[in-house]
Image (cartoon, rainbow over the protein chains, first blue to last red):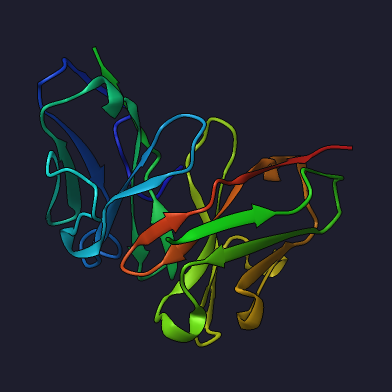
Length: 110
Length: 117
């Protein structure tokens, strides 16, 4: 049972937009920066959106992140088949004093 | 170019101690204000953070595993070593090391560790 809650799966057609939610609490998402990671099956996770909503160089602006209260959202526009992957949110939990991740969301581009 | 690579045994027996080494390049603890972490992922499951050591030697551990974990760094060798005691089959996972700056911004390729007799 992950501290952060993500939908197990989302899907959309190529070219469309999809959002992935990450729900937490005031001890994690609500008061700490959230980062997002993409993991293509069989490979290591890759940072998509870092703290302060910054995209590392090489990550297209089709990927964006936002936060409201104790929920964070990853948005992906102009979906491509290459975006099919598992996506994880992560943040620091002030009460647990630990970095925590969501359970992951599998994105299918139909 | 920043790279990290994990090394260690692929198979350990129950009750044994696991020792993993993360060797990195492209940055150094002496010139970097962040840390290096260990994160694992059981087959088909989510990521789980284990431990982190900062450039100044400060350490953080997962509360649920802290009694089993040790993390050290060798600045001269650009290495971070994780030890986990009392290994159990449920500890079977891919173990990653990752650099922590404003996020876990660079990851190693991971090493699959199987716990089985």
